[in-house]
Amino acid sequence: MAKGEGAEQYSNASLLNKSVSSDVIKLSRKHEHRTRLSICNKICYAIGGAPYQITGCALGFFLQLYLLDVAQLDPFYASIILFIGRAWDAVTDPTVGFLVSRSPWTRFGRMMPWILLSTPFAVMSYFLIWYVPPFEHGKVIWYILFYCVFQTLQTCFHVPYSALTMFITSEQKERDSATAYRMTVEVLGTVLSTAIQGQIVGNAHAPCLPFNSSIFSNSSIFSNSSNSSILPSHNNSDHSLQHTRNAYMIASAVICSMYVLCAIVLFSGVREHEATGIRSKPMPFLKGIKMVMGYGPYAKLVMGFLFTSLAFMLLEGNFALFCSATLGFRKDFHNILLVIMLSATLAIPFWQWFLTRFGKKMAAYVGSLSAVPFMIMVVCVPKNLIVTYIVSFASGVAVAAAFLLPWSMLPDVVDDFQVQNPESAGHEAIFYSFYVFFTKFASGVSLGISTLSLDFAGYITRGCSQPKEVDLTLKLLVSAAPVVLIFIGLGILYTYPITEERRQGNRKILQELRDEADSASDSSEVTETI
Image (cartoon, rainbow, N blue to C red; front, side, top):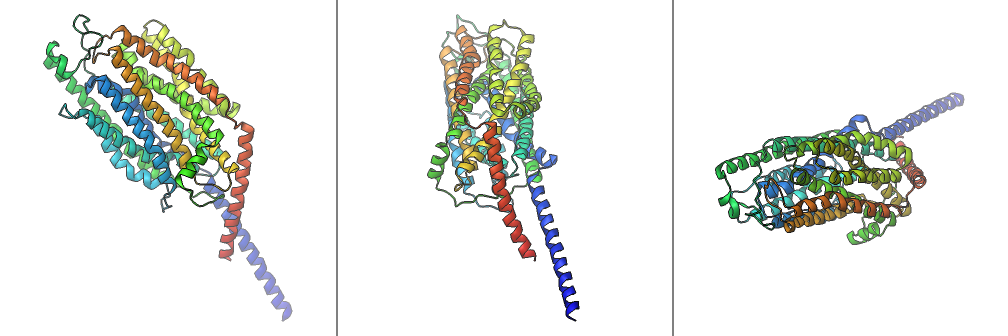
């Protein structure tokens, strides 16, 4: 009898051990599945980044031209709109970052509700930016209002999306891969934006008006009220201008549809996971900002890329005007912009390979410096459409590096911060939002100053030709100023301390912490199962 009971107890213990082992294996496989991303997951995540680049590219390349030549605002007021819109956008980033970091987890995650709820209102405000109101007085207020509203709502989409990188997987390699997918799709989004906005608007652009120096001085600016009485074919001009305005609205409607579609794909194909490992109570806002901004590697990375990004933003914001006004390629500028974005899309895989092979810091140096010769060449070579296309294609390769590198290096800084400050966590949104804050604020200042510079130089709205002072100003804005900013940024980036060895060491430390936390969680689940 005792012998039979002993055999039965041994059999039960054996079955229990097999059950526990099976549960552990299942939980281990569940954890591995949770940290690895499928190609479909990466593509859906990457598509979520397209709305920011699609709308940002359209605004960056075309808004200045639209305000001056289509809405027919004085360059002084256009500079105010551009500066206030970008400055307001910059202020909203850390605010939204703080609110996101304090948001509770829901069944959809912490970031997804922000993305979903902001989308419908963002597309409505974006469409109204490209609508010319039927009144003159208050037109400036109209554009300031809807530009700021859109920037706020877009921030509510983009800051959570940027921080989502840290919550789709805990594997650094998988995050880098997802970031490469994201950058490829985002640059592809700029291609689509340039193609849609450029082809629709470019083919319907209002004809230029002849400039006569005996009638208009360098300081004169065409406007509806002051100069229309002395222009020939006034009715035809008004008709073509209305046709151009309709084209801008059609382009904005197409882009709004793409914005909504991308948000739906992101929500459908990506699952947000609460971070495991180090946990801590939420930190007060000001204390969190002080810790993040006082962290040396982060400050050096942000300041370095602030200047290099600002260089490419100056080029982006003024290149359409430079092509149409200075180079005289008024009918071809949208195709030139398309070549830049297309070459940038094709170069993303190359830069992903390059940073993996030679390191991210080296990629930042090579990528930024590769743009310098072409920035100089575009203003020094005589006007030639073929040369301009060649220079534009080569410049796109450098633009790809400017897109990819900051977002690929920011997760490394967050990981380094977590290793150095194990008692503090949950600041991912603050890291990303303050990087975007400084970049956007500087971009607003640069666009405001550049548009104001055109006013001082005597820019003529819809003029077929511009005064020499305007040509010189545009050359400085797309060549000399960006080159100087690139060298300043790379000088700061030289002091960036996170090397490849340090990055790999951080990866191992954090992986050990996550494995310990997952083991504890798995043991708890096994105990509950038993």
